[in-house]
Amino acid sequence: KGAWLVKSEMATCDDVQKQTNEEGVPQIEKVVLSLRPVGNTPQLKNKKFAVESSRNVSWLVQWLKQKLKCEDDENIFIYVQQTFAPHLDTQFNTLYKCFGTGDKLVLYYCKSPAWG
Amino acid sequence: VMTVSYDQFILDCKHFTGISDSLRDGWRLKQVDGIVYIAKTQIVQQNSDNTCISCDYHVIHHVSYQVPVLYFTACYNTGQVVPVDKIWSVLVSIDGITDKWSMISQTDHPIYSFPCYYVHPCHTATLMKNHSKTSNYLLTYITSVSPLVGLHVSIDYVQN
Image 1 (cartoon, rainbow over the protein chains, first blue to last red):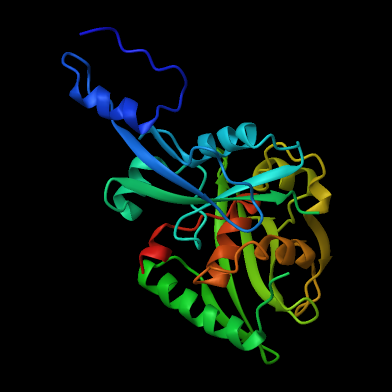
Image 2 (image 1 turned 180 degrees about the vertical axis):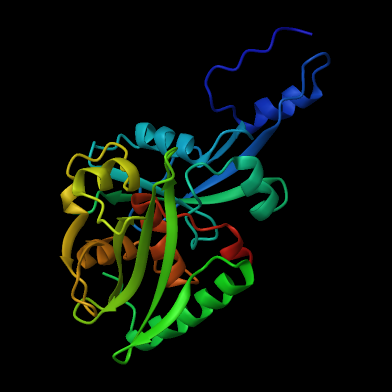
């Protein structure tokens, strides 16, 4: 029953699995994201992550901007089903309920030069 | 770049306003001077002294660029036009973008000729070139630019 230590905000799927199996650890709701690039956007090394279900799209945008080393004038857009950009306030638990397939939520991300 | 023909744009508009009707979301299909477009009026801010800002959004197909373009105006309930600096602080939310004017500029409305704001069509084209696999060009465009201009598009548009 060791202490749980999450090294970063983004736990891997293995961590989530371990968490649900360990005794005495409180169940924190997480959503597994599968992130896919659109157009010429670079691919992530690890495309599957578990995040707190209360996090929202805006948080993911900031995270991706950091991860993809975006310039100040570059933008990240998130889409479901390659079609719809949800409002930045939308939480992952909502998106998962609407668009989750199996155990995960597939999201597409697009890096766009900021309008110029 | 990825463009959309005017005929396809009309089909997309009809589909979009059909969903809007079922959601009571307020988008209307309009035809003026033979030009088909969609329009929505929305109250975006209500102040404690009962003044509010009413915003009109029009999505109109651009003939030269062959892409949809979002035009908008904003007025107080007195009828007074919202000044430029208030537009930025109230309506337009742009995180970390240094040059606002590169995305939203002023022009004369293509149908009615009054001054309004718009998202320049070259930005539509640049954005949409990443979306060759979209199943709904218009929905992708509108949801991509909506955060810029205080427009909220419900998730239910894609549920339908």
